[in-house]
Image (cartoon, rainbow, N blue to C red):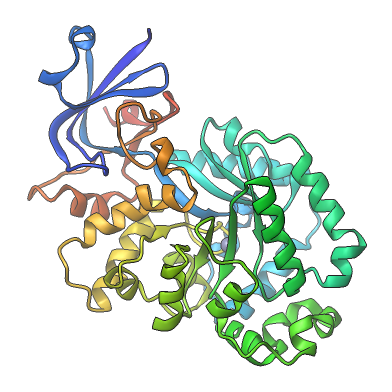
Length: 425
Ligand SMILES: [Zn+2]
């Protein structure tokens, strides 16, 4: 059997406590052993160990991204005054002339950028079919959530639904999910149908929720401001005609069946305690995207509150249309900074935000039981190596503070998919 053993100053299995001077053995694409070299099983004891200075972690889980927008990087280097301001810039970019094959090329580039910074699992939203398949082609894992956006009851009946069914029936290279873009641009009957379709096909759901400051007024009173880019179509929306549901964002999402263990949401910026509690009661996980929120000009998400209230958070980069890089460790660092600024003082901060980028993300995608987001014997051989110094023995803090830009080796499903150690000399 082909085997390979990697060692480092530290190994952070996430599922168990960090280990000093430890090794991870890989056999046939799976992890065979995690622990001190002296305890390697007999048949592996004579193998050469490939030592790297630094820290080995599980492959990271990017719980929210749109890799097809990797070519929109000029947008992500900008600064906007809120979701609506950013949407105008995005729409203008989206409607510029391009060959459809560009989406596939951009997604492939994005997957490579993610892998080069330690991500091996992606929660990927697919808007254009050409972007589908990029994750598997890059030897990464995850879920491709097929996106449904801007559908009223009428448009859904007049072809929207049939189109999605065809798309879902198309051959997939990795697991497929459904992404109702956001409940404000989909009529309640459409969201309900999507939830039902997901349930009947055993698919997971992923949606944007609590991202726009204007969203809540739409659900409460039918205020159409959040729909301003949809032109005349907005007057057709059920909630506009009904003058709202009287419910705040999370309660409205719950009322149309969207919350539950099989759904994870992106952003969760504009939620009060009551709404956060409802998410937790429904086991709906939140993928926080702090750098994207900052570029778009949103408020900072209540990270400290999510942590203090016991949420099992995840973290995502979002796309290069709203963030300067696909390096998930930069968002991990931002989460820790925001939580600290908001008054979070528990010393589990670094462990919790590292969990968000690994096990928390894997749970948000329903992939934790298969061993993703952790280094466990029998689990997938997804590893990331960070060339960092751990001066004070707090390896998780060192990862959070220094991990950005320091991934030197990434292994996905047992394959080396990124290795910059040679250039380091
Ligand atoms: Zn997004």
